[in-house]
Image (cartoon, rainbow, N blue to C red; front, side, top):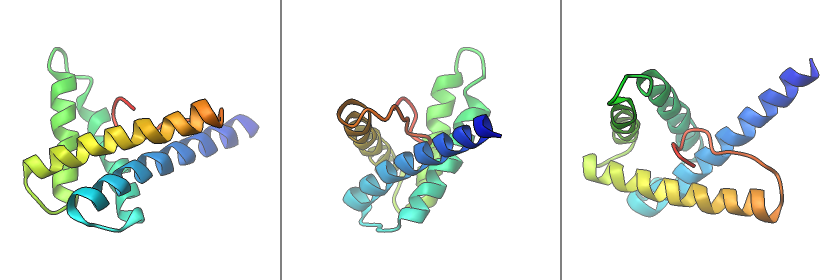
Length: 116
């Protein structure tokens, strides 16, 4: 039971970190101030990434487009706005992870933000 509990806690922390990065980005780019919306967006984006990234040769590109599409679907704006939200979320995730992992030594990830 302990390994499952540890994995569940690690998943939840990583999801909350990814959600925080998307929240910060959406707040800065389009003014949407809803953390729970950002967490769900991160979860859906991770699912879209997982469903498409396995495709040979073009998988990572298709997965990135799918992830940006999820952001476009969940937030106001066009493809360009969604791409900017994604880039800012990625940068925010890197900053958050730097603090959590380097400064505090937690060793967590950011679920829902690819490459972070």
